[in-house]
Image 1 (tube, helix red, strand yellow):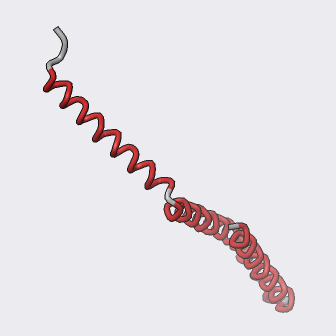
Image 2: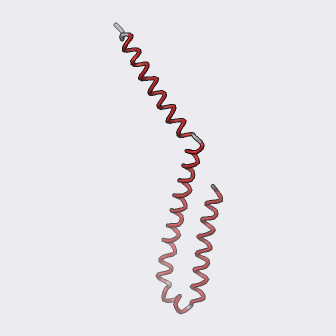
Length: 98
């Protein structure tokens, strides 16, 4: 003998509730605000990663070249200026893309 009508009704009610939750969750994920927030988070993490990589790449150069740079202050100034300009350009391009 098959399931009783009460069991069927209970199963149907459970399935409807589960489906309603799944649809609500899907709607929440595709809301424009949620999509935009995910993109903002992605851009922010990319900017942090690029910034950290740039700092990691420049720091050893500054430490190793410190003694030489002290005897050549103009070279240090130009190098620091170019480093800042490069970092600013990278961050500007990342922001312009998104």
